[in-house]
Each structure stands twice: as C-alpha cells, then as structure tokens.
Length: 325
Image 1 (cartoon, rainbow, N blue to C red):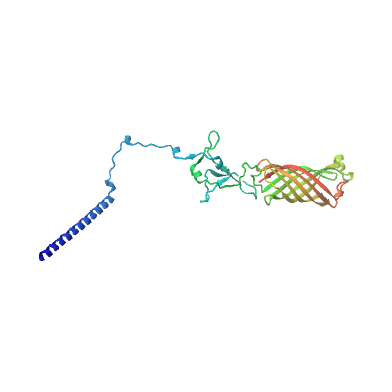
Image 2 (tube, rainbow, N blue to C red):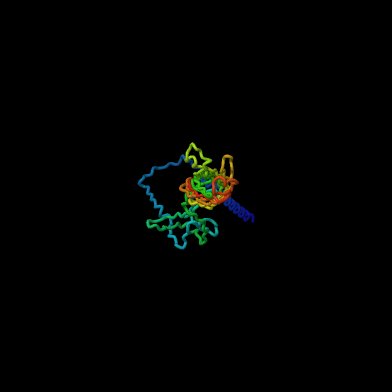
C-alpha cells in the first residue's frame, strides 16, 4: 500500500507540473503577442522609406461626369407649372429643386407691396423642349402640388416710381357768364396713402376786358379802354387716384377762394369737382389733362362786368406737365 500511495502521489505531482508548464507557456505567448502589437504601434515614421515609382507604371482613367448622373425624361403629367412647388408629404419639404424664385426689379409706390415672380429653371435642348430632371428630384416628387402666386414682369414705368410728391404746371381756359379767361399756374399734390392725395395750388385767371369810358385813361387813347385783368384763385382739396400705372385717372373736390378785386381787395369763394388724368412718360415726368366744374360766389361780382351775377357756375379745362418724385 505504501508503494501504491507513493506512485499515486508521483503521478499527481507530474500532472500538476504539466498543468503549471502549460499555463506558463500560455502566459508567455500572450506576453509575446502583446509586445509585438506594442512594437507595431510604435513604429517611427522616420523608419519608413519610399521607393521611387516609374511613371510608366501609373495607369489612371477618368470617367466623364455625365456618366455619373442619372437623367430620366420628365413625364408630361408630372410637369410642375411655373410658380408651383412639389412637397414631400412625409418630410414636408420642397422636393423639386428645378424651380427657383427671381426677384423682379422691382420699386413699388407708397402702399403697394413688393412684387415677386417664380420662374422656371429647366434645361432646354436645341429644339426648345425640356431635356429632363434629375432622378433626385423625381424620387421626392409627390402628386401634391401647391401653386404659388404669379406676378407678371414688366410693370409700367408709372408703377415703378415712388411719387409721394407731384408738381404740376398748367395752362387752360375758363368761363364765368360772359367772361372768358385764360388760366395759368401750378399745383402741388402729396400722397397721404396709396390712392389719396392732398392738393393745393395757385392760378391766375386772366381776361382781356373793355372798360367803360369813365375808367379809361385819355392819354392812352382807345387802347386804354381795353386791357388784361387778373383774378388770383387758390385751391385746396383731396384727390382719389385708384391706380399708379402709366395712365392714372383721378377725381377730386376742392375749396377755391378767389381774389377778384384789389382796390379794395375783394374775395369770392367757390367749390368745384375735378376729374382728370396723368399720363406718365417716364418715372418722373408726365402729362396732365384736367377739368373742373364748380360754383363761385362773390358779394360784388356783378359790379365787375355787365351781364354777370354775384354767384354762378365756373368751368375750367387745362393741360400741362408734371414732375413726380
């Protein structure tokens, strides 16, 4: 039994030593691999050497860029009209990038809004047809189109100016009973809104009159009994002008005090309606045609000329030019 026990212990010791040796070798192998990995990671760049390369060994080919782009013809039923966008229903974003907005040069009058136009940017072939859209746009195109507002280009020159102030110069004719006047003067109009203007002016009403003998100067002969007389007419009123394009009709009403005598000074008062229009030839220059019809009253107007009364209708027609700025 003692020999059997000794043999068993010897075998046990041999097995333990074999396991110990195997574990030691495994640890040694792991340590060696770790050192090799560390050594490879710490390679000095100065140790790297580059060998010359013969240019004949280099073979590089460039493919045309057009071959990398996938272009598909656009379906007629999928065309998006100018001024419209295609939205992706899931991402809620602009899908078709073949459309862009362009600003119309545009300068708008007071009260009007800025004008934009959405234009179409598409490739056109030699026959004027659409060559197609990119597959990127087609992938995101949906059948839900939102049409935006369209504003025509080429607004008239009258619409492009900012006419806050307009200065008029006019000549014309007017009548009050038997008196036929030549009128001349000026007016200033100021825009208080996009369609309403305040106007004020000063005009002379001139008439060539024949005076009674008691008012004639004997030294002047017969010529002294016929000479020009002037009345000064002021005006203050409002005007409605519904458009700001080249042709600009208007209608207005105003209060018109008149000085019809100076020795002593005598005043008359009147009110009148005024239709007319402006025709703009450029941004700042235009022509004007004006008419007026109203009622004039002066306490002693009947003393000015035989056959007239203290109150009556006064009409006027005049034309001239204007400067707007």
